[in-house]
Amino acid sequence: MSDLKKIKDDFLLKLEKKLSLSEINEIKTNLFGKNGLISSQFKKIGSISESEKKKFASELNLIKDELQNQINSKINEIQSEEINKKLKKEKVDITLPERTFVQGKIHPVSQTIDEISSIFSEIGFSVEEGPDVETEYNNFTALNTPDNHPARDMHDTFYLDEKKEKLLRTHTSPVQIRTMLKDKPPFKIIAPGRTYRSDSDQTHSPMFHQVEGLHIDKDINMGHLKGCLNYFIKEFFEVKKIKMRFRPSHFPFTEPSAEVDIGYEIKDGKIFIGEGDKWLEILGCGMVHPKVLKNVKVDSTKYQGYAFGIGIDRLAMLKYGINDLRAFFDCDYRWLNHFGFDPLDVPTNYRGLSR
Image (tube, rainbow, N blue to C red):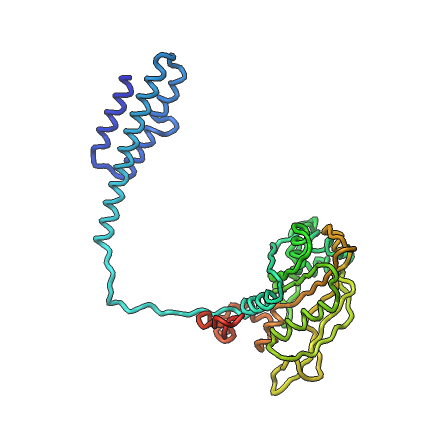
């Protein structure tokens, strides 16, 4: 017990002096560090007789608490002194001119994603998301893409390992797979997001944006698909009528498959959607292949549905008159200042963002 009293008296005496924060931390280490004086005393408890153990432990805990409280009090005292010194030295010059305020702009891609999500939400679609780094199974195999399909080649897909088991997703369709694996039908979702392919020119970029749509339920048919897309295109391009045709195509994950073309014409160098005798391919779609439903454990004898994929960047280019896809990723503020959208002027009754 005399050892404990001596430790307490010695260190309480040291703590009464004017100390720096580093000196107090040194005392704290000497007392409570791994090999500190108080820590060493706790290690002795096991070797003390039962009759003395309770008294020794009680006295040791009291001394430990007293020293810790004193140390914490000194630390708080020093920190308060430092804060008060700073407050006395620091002054705010209220005569200084205000800083220049620069208002940012919302990127056309973000604007377009917002509009697309809002339009589809009006007809019952929810938004799902997934990771940019995907498995080969979710990106290809589960979507009924054969091993010899060109999309699996390294010149088209960014693989992240030698075994080709991890990759940057080439479309957002894997989100459909993830959604169907974790839940039960019916499904009515869209999946907007970044996608990656090894391609770069005026109308292609290594990274771009897509939105995939999926509607699985009983008795869903191509008529529902056409009605859904007709509604979306009219709402997005803000036209009352739209010329639209389904052109037979092939995708591994849909059967039958179709490319969707819309009518347009050019007047005074501008594209007008919905009019004229020219046709513009805008998206791919089809009825979900029964093998895809089987891969996600959905009974294709009870459920069926449609899926579609739309290039978000190209929709933005068409709607807002942007003629080079690469400009989306140039980080040029002058370009963004021209094509961007003002976040502070958003009407409360408008689904998108104002320009």
